[in-house]
Amino acid sequence: MRDNAVQQAPIWAERFWSKVLKVEGECWEWQAGKYPTGYGRFYAEGHYRGTHRISYELTKGPIPIGMFICHTCDNHGCVNPMHLFAGAPKDNTQDMIRKGRSGLTQHKGRRVRTHCNKGHEWSGYNLQVNKSEGYIKHMCRACRLERDRINAAKAKAKKSQQ
Image (cartoon, rainbow, N blue to C red):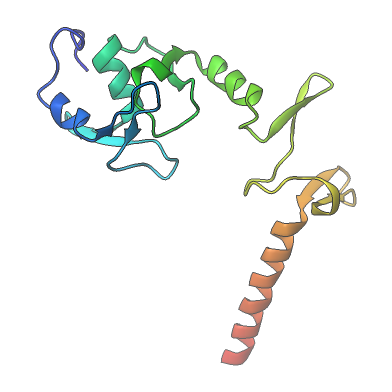
């Protein structure tokens, strides 16, 4: 984006802001297209860009090189400039862990996963530990059961085709 983003708004800025639901003192929710992660997306200057980044640039100026635009509100669809700040990748990761959004926790000074990739908590009955392969491997029982159901259905379908 141009270096003079704050002084001279691009021709598409009005179109951008028309897609925002503004509520005073609250998140400004992006009302148009979104990425699967929940972040808004907007087509401008020949490509799609994250709406939180565009909002930051339109109101605060260019994003410093190597910096992320982070949300204080943790709402991926929010474009309220008061909820956005520039932070280094490390700041963003530490903020995510501190707020419990990473599926990680600290144990003896190192990060430890607390949830599987599908978001199931690794605890109690749902945690399965496999030590037979020479190392400890945590497995999600819910995911394993779902995978077993799918594989059984595939095997049954294959058998019925023969």
